Length: 304
Image (cartoon, rainbow, N blue to C red; front, top):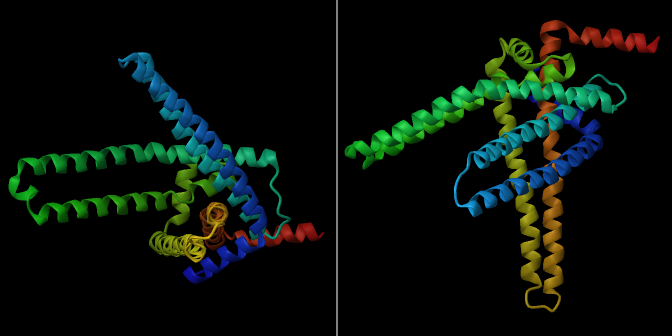
Protein backbone atom coordinates (compact mmCIF):
# COMPACT_ATOMS: atom_id res chain seq x y z
CA UNK A 1 0.00 0.00 0.00
CA UNK A 2 1.62 3.27 -1.15
CA UNK A 3 1.29 6.70 0.46
CA UNK A 4 -1.79 7.72 -1.54
CA UNK A 5 -3.57 4.44 -0.78
CA UNK A 6 -2.74 4.77 2.93
CA UNK A 7 -4.21 8.26 3.07
CA UNK A 8 -7.29 7.14 1.14
CA UNK A 9 -7.76 4.34 3.64
CA UNK A 10 -7.40 6.77 6.55
CA UNK A 11 -10.13 9.03 5.18
CA UNK A 12 -12.31 6.01 4.39
CA UNK A 13 -12.03 4.75 7.99
CA UNK A 14 -12.68 8.25 9.31
CA UNK A 15 -15.70 8.72 7.06
CA UNK A 16 -17.30 5.47 8.18
CA UNK A 17 -16.75 6.20 11.90
CA UNK A 18 -16.95 10.00 11.74
CA UNK A 19 -19.75 10.74 14.20
CA UNK A 20 -18.52 8.35 16.86
CA UNK A 21 -14.95 9.58 16.45
CA UNK A 22 -16.14 13.18 16.69
CA UNK A 23 -18.34 12.55 19.73
CA UNK A 24 -15.60 10.66 21.56
CA UNK A 25 -12.98 13.34 20.82
CA UNK A 26 -15.36 16.10 21.95
CA UNK A 27 -16.13 14.35 25.25
CA UNK A 28 -12.48 13.64 26.06
CA UNK A 29 -11.25 17.08 24.98
CA UNK A 30 -13.95 18.92 26.93
CA UNK A 31 -13.37 16.87 30.09
CA UNK A 32 -9.60 17.32 29.81
CA UNK A 33 -9.96 21.10 29.38
CA UNK A 34 -11.94 21.41 32.61
CA UNK A 35 -9.54 19.11 34.47
CA UNK A 36 -6.49 20.97 33.17
CA UNK A 37 -8.03 24.27 34.24
CA UNK A 38 -8.53 22.85 37.73
CA UNK A 39 -4.91 21.68 37.93
CA UNK A 40 -3.58 25.03 36.71
CA UNK A 41 -5.80 26.77 39.24
CA UNK A 42 -4.33 24.69 42.05
CA UNK A 43 -0.85 25.43 40.72
CA UNK A 44 -1.61 29.16 40.70
CA UNK A 45 -2.88 29.06 44.27
CA UNK A 46 0.28 27.26 45.33
CA UNK A 47 2.48 29.86 43.63
CA UNK A 48 0.54 32.71 45.29
CA UNK A 49 0.89 31.03 48.68
CA UNK A 50 4.65 30.66 48.29
CA UNK A 51 4.96 34.27 47.16
CA UNK A 52 2.92 35.47 50.15
CA UNK A 53 5.15 33.62 52.58
CA UNK A 54 8.12 35.54 51.23
CA UNK A 55 10.48 32.57 51.12
CA UNK A 56 10.79 29.35 49.17
CA UNK A 57 10.23 26.53 51.65
CA UNK A 58 10.99 22.87 51.07
CA UNK A 59 7.27 22.09 51.39
CA UNK A 60 6.36 24.70 48.79
CA UNK A 61 8.95 23.48 46.29
CA UNK A 62 7.93 19.86 46.86
CA UNK A 63 4.27 20.78 46.31
CA UNK A 64 5.08 22.54 43.05
CA UNK A 65 7.12 19.56 41.86
CA UNK A 66 4.22 17.21 42.60
CA UNK A 67 1.80 19.50 40.77
CA UNK A 68 4.18 19.70 37.81
CA UNK A 69 4.42 15.91 37.71
CA UNK A 70 0.62 15.72 37.98
CA UNK A 71 0.32 17.93 34.90
CA UNK A 72 2.69 15.62 32.98
CA UNK A 73 0.75 12.52 34.05
CA UNK A 74 -2.52 14.24 33.16
CA UNK A 75 -1.22 15.22 29.71
CA UNK A 76 -0.12 11.62 29.05
CA UNK A 77 -3.50 10.30 30.20
CA UNK A 78 -5.40 12.67 27.93
CA UNK A 79 -3.20 11.79 24.97
CA UNK A 80 -3.64 8.11 25.80
CA UNK A 81 -7.42 8.54 26.01
CA UNK A 82 -7.69 10.39 22.69
CA UNK A 83 -5.41 7.99 20.83
CA UNK A 84 -6.72 4.77 22.35
CA UNK A 85 -10.34 5.62 21.57
CA UNK A 86 -9.51 6.58 17.99
CA UNK A 87 -7.53 3.37 17.48
CA UNK A 88 -10.26 1.14 18.93
CA UNK A 89 -12.94 2.78 16.78
CA UNK A 90 -10.66 2.52 13.74
CA UNK A 91 -10.03 -1.16 14.43
CA UNK A 92 -13.74 -1.94 14.47
CA UNK A 93 -14.19 0.02 11.23
CA UNK A 94 -11.11 -1.48 9.56
CA UNK A 95 -12.27 -5.02 10.31
CA UNK A 96 -15.85 -4.38 9.25
CA UNK A 97 -17.38 -4.91 12.68
CA UNK A 98 -20.19 -3.04 14.39
CA UNK A 99 -18.57 0.13 15.73
CA UNK A 100 -18.79 -0.05 19.51
CA UNK A 101 -16.63 1.18 22.36
CA UNK A 102 -17.30 -0.81 25.58
CA UNK A 103 -16.23 1.12 28.66
CA UNK A 104 -14.27 -1.77 30.23
CA UNK A 105 -12.33 -2.35 27.02
CA UNK A 106 -11.70 1.39 26.65
CA UNK A 107 -10.34 1.79 30.20
CA UNK A 108 -7.92 -1.09 29.70
CA UNK A 109 -6.78 0.34 26.37
CA UNK A 110 -6.20 3.78 27.89
CA UNK A 111 -4.10 2.28 30.68
CA UNK A 112 -1.95 0.32 28.23
CA UNK A 113 -1.59 3.36 25.96
CA UNK A 114 -0.52 5.42 28.97
CA UNK A 115 2.25 2.93 29.80
CA UNK A 116 3.52 3.07 26.21
CA UNK A 117 3.56 6.88 26.25
CA UNK A 118 5.29 6.85 29.63
CA UNK A 119 7.98 4.53 28.26
CA UNK A 120 8.48 6.95 25.36
CA UNK A 121 8.83 9.84 27.80
CA UNK A 122 11.42 7.91 29.82
CA UNK A 123 13.50 7.33 26.69
CA UNK A 124 13.00 10.91 25.52
CA UNK A 125 14.24 12.45 28.78
CA UNK A 126 18.00 11.77 28.22
CA UNK A 127 17.69 13.01 24.63
CA UNK A 128 16.04 16.20 25.84
CA UNK A 129 18.70 16.72 28.50
CA UNK A 130 21.49 16.33 25.94
CA UNK A 131 19.78 18.73 23.53
CA UNK A 132 19.24 21.37 26.21
CA UNK A 133 22.86 20.99 27.28
CA UNK A 134 24.13 21.38 23.70
CA UNK A 135 22.03 24.48 23.01
CA UNK A 136 22.94 26.06 26.34
CA UNK A 137 26.62 25.24 25.87
CA UNK A 138 26.66 26.65 22.37
CA UNK A 139 25.01 29.91 23.48
CA UNK A 140 27.35 30.23 26.46
CA UNK A 141 30.39 29.50 24.29
CA UNK A 142 29.35 32.14 21.76
CA UNK A 143 29.43 34.84 24.44
CA UNK A 144 33.12 34.18 24.99
CA UNK A 145 33.98 34.29 21.30
CA UNK A 146 33.28 37.82 20.08
CA UNK A 147 33.90 37.00 16.45
CA UNK A 148 31.33 34.20 16.51
CA UNK A 149 28.76 36.11 18.59
CA UNK A 150 28.81 39.12 16.27
CA UNK A 151 28.73 37.27 12.97
CA UNK A 152 26.09 35.65 10.81
CA UNK A 153 27.86 32.34 11.34
CA UNK A 154 26.54 32.27 14.91
CA UNK A 155 22.91 32.42 13.75
CA UNK A 156 23.50 29.99 10.89
CA UNK A 157 25.03 27.42 13.23
CA UNK A 158 22.26 27.99 15.77
CA UNK A 159 19.58 27.43 13.12
CA UNK A 160 21.35 24.26 11.93
CA UNK A 161 21.46 23.02 15.53
CA UNK A 162 17.76 23.73 16.08
CA UNK A 163 16.81 22.05 12.78
CA UNK A 164 18.85 19.00 13.80
CA UNK A 165 17.07 18.92 17.16
CA UNK A 166 13.61 19.11 15.54
CA UNK A 167 14.55 16.43 12.99
CA UNK A 168 15.87 14.19 15.77
CA UNK A 169 12.67 14.65 17.78
CA UNK A 170 10.47 13.82 14.76
CA UNK A 171 12.52 10.71 13.99
CA UNK A 172 12.31 9.64 17.63
CA UNK A 173 8.52 10.05 17.69
CA UNK A 174 8.15 8.17 14.41
CA UNK A 175 10.39 5.34 15.64
CA UNK A 176 7.91 4.59 18.44
CA UNK A 177 4.77 5.79 16.63
CA UNK A 178 3.17 2.34 16.51
CA UNK A 179 3.76 1.54 20.17
CA UNK A 180 0.38 2.90 21.31
CA UNK A 181 -1.45 0.91 18.63
CA UNK A 182 0.44 -2.20 19.77
CA UNK A 183 -0.45 -1.51 23.42
CA UNK A 184 -4.12 -0.92 22.62
CA UNK A 185 -4.73 -3.86 20.28
CA UNK A 186 -2.23 -6.47 21.48
CA UNK A 187 -2.43 -5.85 25.26
CA UNK A 188 1.25 -4.93 25.58
CA UNK A 189 2.74 -2.62 28.19
CA UNK A 190 5.66 -0.23 28.55
CA UNK A 191 8.83 -1.14 26.62
CA UNK A 192 7.36 -4.35 25.18
CA UNK A 193 4.98 -2.20 23.17
CA UNK A 194 7.86 0.03 22.01
CA UNK A 195 9.99 -2.91 20.84
CA UNK A 196 7.06 -4.51 19.02
CA UNK A 197 6.24 -1.20 17.29
CA UNK A 198 9.83 -0.73 16.15
CA UNK A 199 9.87 -4.26 14.69
CA UNK A 200 6.72 -3.54 12.70
CA UNK A 201 8.34 -0.44 11.19
CA UNK A 202 11.49 -2.31 10.19
CA UNK A 203 12.05 -2.17 6.43
CA UNK A 204 9.52 0.64 5.90
CA UNK A 205 10.84 3.25 8.33
CA UNK A 206 11.74 6.00 5.88
CA UNK A 207 8.75 5.44 3.60
CA UNK A 208 6.32 5.69 6.50
CA UNK A 209 8.23 8.65 7.93
CA UNK A 210 7.66 10.42 4.61
CA UNK A 211 3.96 9.51 4.77
CA UNK A 212 3.68 11.02 8.25
CA UNK A 213 5.42 14.23 7.19
CA UNK A 214 3.14 14.60 4.16
CA UNK A 215 0.15 13.89 6.41
CA UNK A 216 1.32 16.52 8.87
CA UNK A 217 1.60 19.13 6.11
CA UNK A 218 -1.89 18.28 4.78
CA UNK A 219 -3.47 18.56 8.23
CA UNK A 220 -1.56 21.78 8.96
CA UNK A 221 -2.79 23.36 5.73
CA UNK A 222 -6.36 22.18 6.31
CA UNK A 223 -6.51 23.47 9.89
CA UNK A 224 -4.91 26.76 8.88
CA UNK A 225 -7.39 27.21 6.03
CA UNK A 226 -10.37 26.34 8.24
CA UNK A 227 -9.24 28.70 10.99
CA UNK A 228 -8.61 31.43 8.40
CA UNK A 229 -12.12 31.08 6.98
CA UNK A 230 -13.60 31.16 10.47
CA UNK A 231 -11.77 34.43 11.11
CA UNK A 232 -12.60 35.88 7.69
CA UNK A 233 -16.39 35.54 7.97
CA UNK A 234 -16.72 37.50 11.25
CA UNK A 235 -14.29 40.14 9.97
CA UNK A 236 -16.24 40.72 6.76
CA UNK A 237 -19.57 40.86 8.58
CA UNK A 238 -18.08 43.19 11.19
CA UNK A 239 -16.94 45.58 8.43
CA UNK A 240 -20.32 45.31 6.71
CA UNK A 241 -22.31 46.20 9.86
CA UNK A 242 -19.82 48.66 11.36
CA UNK A 243 -21.53 51.72 12.82
CA UNK A 244 -24.97 50.09 13.01
CA UNK A 245 -26.91 49.92 16.32
CA UNK A 246 -26.78 46.12 16.26
CA UNK A 247 -22.98 45.93 16.00
CA UNK A 248 -22.54 44.78 19.64
CA UNK A 249 -25.03 41.94 19.23
CA UNK A 250 -23.50 41.00 15.89
CA UNK A 251 -20.00 41.05 17.41
CA UNK A 252 -21.12 38.75 20.23
CA UNK A 253 -22.77 36.30 17.80
CA UNK A 254 -19.71 36.34 15.53
CA UNK A 255 -17.36 35.69 18.43
CA UNK A 256 -19.50 32.75 19.52
CA UNK A 257 -19.52 31.51 15.92
CA UNK A 258 -15.73 31.67 15.78
CA UNK A 259 -15.32 29.95 19.15
CA UNK A 260 -17.74 27.13 18.34
CA UNK A 261 -16.30 26.72 14.86
CA UNK A 262 -12.74 26.54 16.20
CA UNK A 263 -13.78 23.92 18.74
CA UNK A 264 -15.53 21.89 16.04
CA UNK A 265 -12.43 21.97 13.82
CA UNK A 266 -10.26 20.91 16.76
CA UNK A 267 -12.59 18.06 17.71
CA UNK A 268 -12.66 16.88 14.09
CA UNK A 269 -8.84 16.89 13.88
CA UNK A 270 -8.13 15.08 17.16
CA UNK A 271 -8.89 11.52 15.92
CA UNK A 272 -6.88 11.77 12.70
CA UNK A 273 -3.47 10.96 14.17
CA UNK A 274 -4.88 7.90 15.93
CA UNK A 275 -6.63 6.76 12.75
CA UNK A 276 -3.44 7.16 10.71
CA UNK A 277 -1.49 5.20 13.34
CA UNK A 278 -4.12 2.44 13.34
CA UNK A 279 -4.17 2.17 9.54
CA UNK A 280 -0.36 2.01 9.35
CA UNK A 281 -0.31 -0.56 12.15
CA UNK A 282 -2.86 -2.84 10.49
CA UNK A 283 -1.24 -2.36 7.07
CA UNK A 284 2.14 -3.42 8.50
CA UNK A 285 0.57 -6.45 10.15
CA UNK A 286 -1.12 -7.42 6.89
CA UNK A 287 2.16 -7.00 5.02
CA UNK A 288 4.38 -8.81 7.53
CA UNK A 289 2.07 -11.23 9.36
CA UNK A 290 -0.92 -11.92 7.10
CA UNK A 291 -3.49 -10.16 9.27
CA UNK A 292 -5.92 -10.08 6.32
CA UNK A 293 -6.11 -13.87 6.47
CA UNK A 294 -7.01 -13.70 10.16
CA UNK A 295 -9.73 -11.15 9.38
CA UNK A 296 -11.11 -13.36 6.59
CA UNK A 297 -11.22 -16.40 8.88
CA UNK A 298 -12.93 -14.34 11.59
CA UNK A 299 -15.55 -13.14 9.09
CA UNK A 300 -16.09 -16.74 7.97
CA UNK A 301 -16.69 -17.87 11.56
CA UNK A 302 -19.13 -15.00 12.10
CA UNK A 303 -21.02 -16.00 8.96
CA UNK A 304 -21.31 -19.57 10.23
